[in-house]
Amino acid sequence: MTTNARLRALVELADTGSVRGAAERLVVTESAISSALGSLSAEVGVPLVDRHGRGVRLTPAGQRYTEYARTILGLHHEAVLAARGEVDPEHGSIRLAAVTTAGELLLPALLASFTAKYPGVNCELEVASRTAIWPMLARHEADVVVAGRPPADLDQMRVRAISPNTLVVVGPPEAAQRFDPAQATWLLREAGSGTRATTTTLLEELEITPPQMVLGSHGAVVAAAVAGLGVTLVSRQAVRRELEAGVLVQLDVPGTPLDRPWHIVTQSPCTGSAELLITHVIAHRELGWESVD
Image (cartoon, helix red, strand yellow):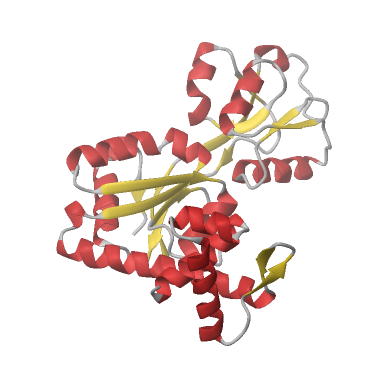
């Protein structure tokens, strides 16, 4: 196996928790995975895995090395895309990652517009929580991220464009009658959601500890609010139709509305195809993005 293949074997072992799982993902034999891990440990000079029951697990050194392995693999993939994009950006690839709400609300129109003009560009999209996508950018596993406020400690990244986003508290029409934020049930997003973190901060600032219900996605939270299960903090854009239809109403809560613009962030420098995407998004103002450069 090449060094890259050995690194991929290690990363897949870390992700699946077993040699069998890594072998299935890479479509190779289990003995090939074991051989790759042994060769990699010998190359590094310390054990990266050890026996655990009938299987194997990463040693502390292996866990640490895997963090670098992810970055090495991501950077190598990015280098390949950059080289190909330098020759022909209109027939390259872009790895996008977006938080759930942005993936549902913003990316469909953005990608539809872009791919209509550049059908030769292959766009891969991963939709996940905030805590998952920013590490992807840091490890060079994504070329473009669409999310809320970027972490302050991201190096060699560039905020390329922003789009307005306002967070409001909404609930069913009956919730507006004698509404008390401290007594209402608050519907929360899944762990790792930026909106959930913002909601938690808002409740702390209001110094209240109301009843809470955790749901698994943006769509589930909105549906639960429409059904009358509680109130929630959400992007006004994301519930525009529900507000216009009257099945949800905006509620007056101190500290809201909150201005939380969307950001498009890329590597610096980014690939030619990713640069093509940024140029397209900024040029088409109907998509709602403005350049920050």
